[in-house]
Length: 230
Image (spheres, one colour):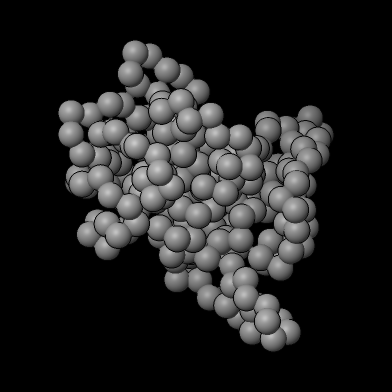
């Protein structure tokens, strides 16, 4: 995190998952680890409205401050950024005019949680810039709600947990029943090991995923928690 004058910047990493595919939305255990690549969000005061600029998108987006009712009026990619502002507004926070710049080197659609890195960096930066003082649980809840409610991506929470709490040289054990986490030493470089990530040329979109819904159909009647891992 860096802060100068009225500008605040936070970095959040992408992730890979070591153990526990499709178990985060089934109240299981997962063991992801953060990557060196990630997203940096920079927040500054603005004269009016909310302005979102991405180094990876050709055009910026300007939005009139509102709650979630404004989500259909902007491009999908910008909802990952504006989502936190919408939800905070709906929850009674007076969010002032802001300009948010984002820059990510996590490949989009590669299953490395570029969306979680984006959302978590923005939430961290906004929380710090506005002095909200959100604790770890509140940060996690807000980042997951951005993807679930503002974007419509049924993520289970693993991606946000490791993007918020991951540490260098460690994996993160997550109990998805309680959302408690524990850092687990995993110094691959010290043992001269490497993690190989293969590009299968099969793009992934969390907002189009139906894994959580499929899992819900396998549950007993009354189970209604359709979430999806990325």
